[in-house]
Image (cartoon, rainbow, N blue to C red; front, top):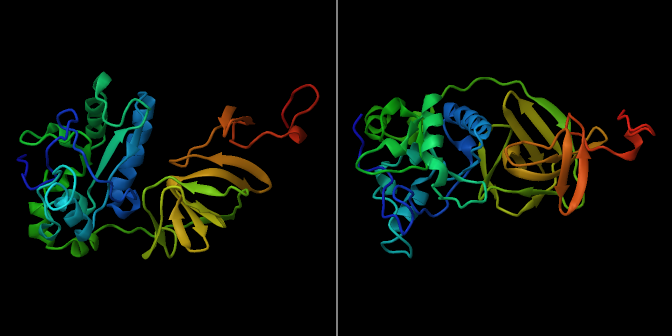
Length: 296
């Protein structure tokens, strides 16, 4: 399928070919198409199984964010990374159908050794996604997208005109959430996303509030429905996939890591101290270990 030249493009600013240097925008996958959200979670699981650790880069962009990116290398410092103005709606990110990923194993975010980006791209294609590394006129290896509307945005613009009209077509299933009261320690829970949206309900409307990398929050409740995990704070609901810290639940402690993962059935060094967790992820304490070493 022909690629549109109006997609995110640019000079490579010294990075390996096809790895574009970007200004960091939103990293909240919940702002994207529901099918892309589920596909991202599948991709992470399948990549982990192959020893490929990826991080979530840019997701949805507003017109203002796209214009700010367009200004980079033109009227603002930095390298040119896109030919798409915000008002043109020519970036897949503006339609909520794409995200970027990066290498998150400590070897360098854009280190291509071991054919890293091609391997992730092949896994993405195996679950029905498109990969920017297959583009011919412009190669964008960190770019993953829903291929239903081609490799660009012309079909979307012709069919829907605006993102708002397109979003109305997204299938919204009524979800039943399981709520549970939770707490945390004095250090609270740290936000790991560059910009985390605050919503009025689990999976609800954007309130306009934001938490940023390094902010520490006190969770009050959690809400679970399938693969969706949300935490309530005093400002509203946020995705639990972008948090890290100790959680107190039902009188027991567990340690939350990004992606809503947690250590289980092993020892884990956290902040310089070693902790032991049972196979359900609960931290072991002396009250649960008998004299013969059996865990109760």
